[in-house]
Length: 223
Image (cartoon, rainbow, N blue to C red; front, side, top):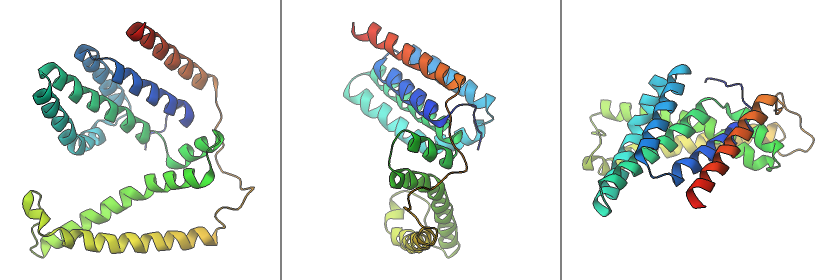
């Protein structure tokens, strides 16, 4: 995971500001330019290959949005809808790829959110990829047994062969996690953290620029 120089809270504010900007503009030139900037940033952070893997799952949603908007409205709306979803997905891909779960949870704690909420968010970010890896292992094992789990409508007939073992492993995993949390005194007040997030001048500058750009864009768009 690539770590950035920004505090998780400032990156979260920048991500939401970018999302609002992408939502209010309906110009496909602006959306294309913003996607180009995001791609340059991805290449600078050496995240090009992970982003291409991410597009394998996001691409279907982008194509679906494009087709639905095109059929319901027009071609311009379809292009804008597809580009907007691709941009927003890339923004949050950058955010999660450069923000370790523990840093994000500690930053949210500093913002006043309750510890159980931040723990659930952090645990989800860490363990969902683990379950996805186990799902791939189950799929490969079932394919080796001759069960066709390749996609398409045929997968619906053999879905229990994938979902059943995955649910069993997920429940076992959750039980082990609960025992570990209980053994470590989950929920005890007065706990300390290895990493304490701090806002620096670069964070204040990034937040100020993001909010200024958002204010100007909203003024241009609605005033």
